[in-house]
Length: 290
Image (cartoon, rainbow, N blue to C red; front, side):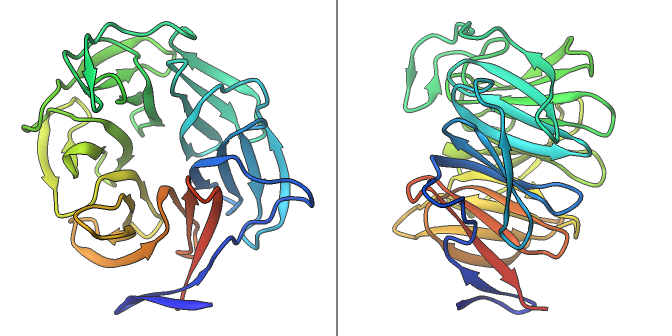
């Protein structure tokens, strides 16, 4: 094992921690998340798309075959798994055992956002055009980042009714260039990973711009841990490698852990980190040294 990290945030790195049954391999791993019992859910671009393990790495099962064509975002809130199907422009939720609950959008129907170049769209539009992440807010509403061919965040009522949308293409406050992930802080504010702009933008639950965090590689994923810290998967940038970055609630960097190319990051109740690797099609574990 390799030790990594700084200060109070030191970890033992175990590469390729999660093991599938003999003869099976992961597809491209897009996201990783932990539920309230520290079971680890891996979202892969292969059927079945959701693979479940215990925190010791033992395989527990898999589900979702035929439900998601192009797995991208996965967040767990309570007893519900929230996913996005990127190329089919659908956001869907499931029970923890894979029973479908809610579907937003129409499969294969994309909003008209005009010309798209390097993920920067000509104009923003309604839901969806290649959405990236879905999450439920404590207020009961559902928020979806719509990013690869749009530049918006959409707010839905719990029954799926669209309530509001905000954002437009660009790099100013409240503008987006590939909104790629979303988290919610203890006060109910939204933290949106604006990947190509290399920042996290912060909004009220009504879409009011409140501020941003910068000084990072393009954020692929942002997850709030039970400790109140944020775990951010940063892309390679300016000659630097990929990182899993730990920031406190004010955005201060607590640790930056060099990683293989990481697209999704999950954290369990013990503070251990699971890094979902796209190119290497695997999951590394960073075990926090207490």
